[in-house]
Amino acid sequence: MLSTILKQTSWSMLGSIFGFGVGFFVKLYLINAVGTEDYGKYVIGQTVVATVTVFAALALPQILLRFLPAFVEKKEFEKASDLASFGLQFLLLVGVLSAIGIMLFHDRVAAIFHDRDALLNTIIFISALYIPLSLYSAVITASYRSLLKIKEIVLYGTFILISLRAIGVFIVFSFSNNIIYFLVIEILSQAVVLFIMTKKFDASNFTFFKPFPIKEVLEEKQVVSFGKKMYFYALIGFAGGYTITLIMSISLPAKYIGVYSILTTLAGLTAFLLNNLNSVFAPVISKYHAAGEIKKLESLFKETTFIINIMSAPFIVLLILFSHDILGLYGKDVSAFTIPFAILLLGSYYNLFVGNSGMLLLMGGWESDEIRIKIANMLLVILFSSIFIAPFGLIAAVWINTLSAVFVNTLHVIYIKKRFGFTPWEVYSFFIFILTIIAIIYLGFQTEHRSYSFFEYIFLALLIPSIYWIPFYKKISAIIKSVKENR
Image (cartoon, rainbow, N blue to C red; front, side, top):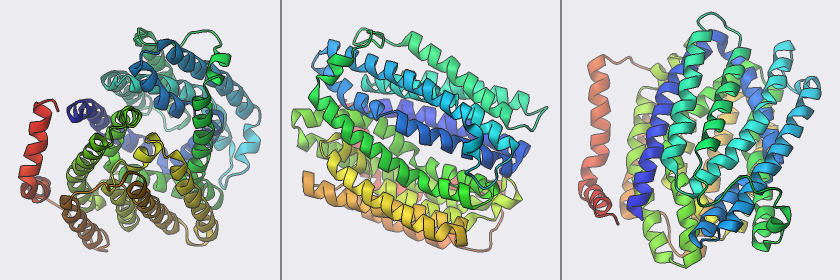
């Protein structure tokens, strides 16, 4: 199974690398064209969309990911079709109604935020179109993932989507600096990709188009019970995750929203391996938990956590080393935020250090524990954001973000030890952790930043991974061998 996970993850990683490589330059080009202030207003519009979407979704994408793999594994294809069809039809209806509501009251929504003007009004009005598209995309993607069709998700949802968006941005913003055109490009690109993914879906296991199977789904008591928990989980997770951005949007100028979005996006890139492993690991957890194969689950958990750490830690150190130059690509005003960036990377690395812990609780039958963790985190984030963001601004937001990650992931490990009897780590992981934390603190909190020559960039890009990988040559070789043996 490790071989299957890593092979599927390699496709997901390929998509992430392509998305990062192309998306990085697209965002650079866009922000330099429109400015951080207008980009911040675009982020506000996306926050409104995310707020509405999480309430409208009723956690149906998570329900699909939890139960579709089990139904397919047991060859209960009729139940799989009922669930997938209900999810798609319900979310399309709710998505369209939600979009109409936002469009009708967009001016009142815009009045909530700090930098309300005609541009923000228009952005919120157009952004409403994302809502049905996002919900439709969530169902299609969850269905592909449940069948471990990661390659198809990467091909359609990454390569084609990002290529269409990039071409549109580079052409349109050669002649314009109006952020509205970016929304139009994104919406049209996503619509094209969703049409392709729907057309190409392999319906031999289940279909999306069974008419109105409401009764059949509601009769599945296990699905309904899990759905209620997951909806509550989604709401509190959203509150914990988007509270910072919402309060910043209300309290601070749009420029700082744009800068915060840039910093969190770059810091979030460090989790590309974790996110890609999660996309494959989630249905595997569901299968192993259903079969009671806890020892296999423990082995996979520890090995994937080690892989996440040994591959991601050097990338984080390189980001710290070159942070001044990387942020400077977005403009001189952004390059001044290297210390907030280092603070965010501390939280990002701690999230990587514990591996797929949250997903293990969620898909391993202990979603109630995960909900309790999210409730506590939500309350603390709301409290500290309300108190500190208005007077202290961006620096308060990044510290709250980082401390939230430390709090949540520490509780994940405690609950996993309690429920499953093991932790994410082998002894190797602690050496990686100590080395990486020291590097982030020492390099990231320096106030003076030097420039590197081309050869220094190359030398450091080779040296840092070598420092991590050479001491663990035997461990890495054993993992590679197990993959080749298709374990």
